[in-house]
Image 1 (cartoon, helix red, strand yellow):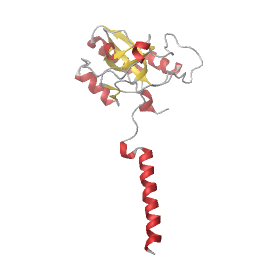
Image 2 (cartoon, rainbow, N blue to C red; image 1 turned 180 degrees about the vertical axis):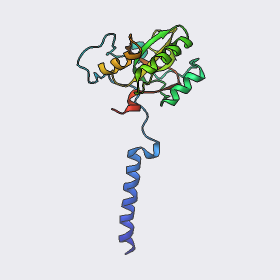
Image 3 (cartoon, helix red, strand yellow; image 1 turned 90 degrees about the horizontal axis):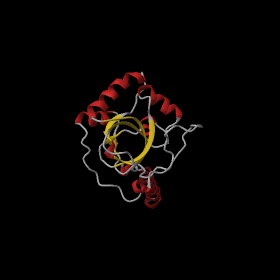
Image 4 (cartoon, rainbow, N blue to C red; image 1 turned 90 degrees about the vertical axis):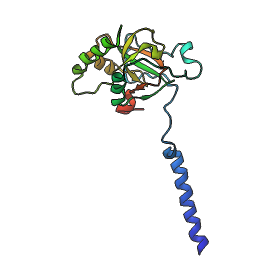
Length: 189
């Protein structure tokens, strides 16, 4: 009788172990994908300045660049972390760029001015240096919101409440600073 009881227990233990490993519970879930295919989202029309192609070959090739200091203030980094930002160094995103500015203070002032225009809905815009993203023109401060998929017309309309010239740029993160990602925070595939 001992062998009859032991066999079902062993099968249950083995099945539980396999399920746990396959679900990622032991590994804290899978890493974020490092190369995001282009997606048209749910939009039927082309958006001006939207980058729907791949990141430039010089940006897309090679391994993840070692992280470098971004030079962004502790306050801006704390804001990005507080709205769900994580380290995405090496990840390529479609960024809604709300604007480019000469200084961090100008970028932060633009974000502060725009925030009330979004009403009760949470925007995921942050202040960051354009140098932190391979594929963006370096040398400025930007207010950006990261998306895995190409933002829809509705995403851009929402962004334009606070940033009338908002447009999409595809770029790769080169710093380990916290970057909130729209789909991570609101759901979606």
